[in-house]
Image (cartoon, rainbow, N blue to C red; front, side, top):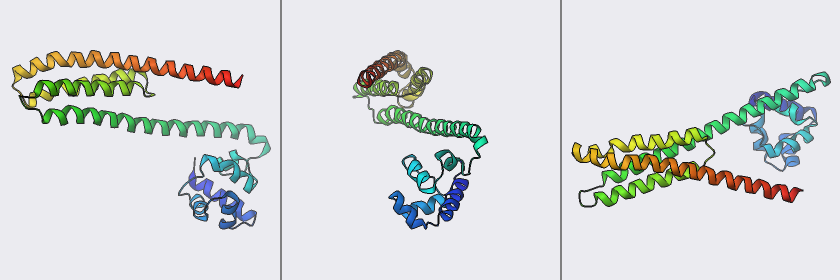
Length: 219
């Protein structure tokens, strides 16, 4: 959606109805600063504002989102255009949010792996190693509850195992590090996949149960 075009359309329609920004804001129960932001293209109206704003300006929601009046013979074509544009924008926004969530999870695994391992000493190494593995597996389970595809969830477990494997070479000699990694990395990998599958299954069961409950209430 073109914020500048939408803003100019709002301004034009407001002036056509001989309304000031303050008067329009009062009709919408918002601030005149919000109206000013829309008209200058610095933001677009929130979804909750679309219907009240379209009514105040005497336009349709589709016209508001397109930023132009729609001729009668073009309504069907323009309506499809709005739907496609809205779906594209929503998909792009979801993609950005998923990227941020995935990055945060990856950073968390890095922090757990190297943050705790850096503080290890020979005396507490074994207990700390088990604790790190437990935390990494817990995060894998939480990632399994997200809305990512199963392919991406398995990739996350692989990422966790890959960053874990070289961690002990920084603090112990090669023979000891190989022994530690040879034991714990397969446990982390297999355990992570099992927990991701378990979490995904649980999420699907809960989602199905919620849908059934809603269907019963609506019927």
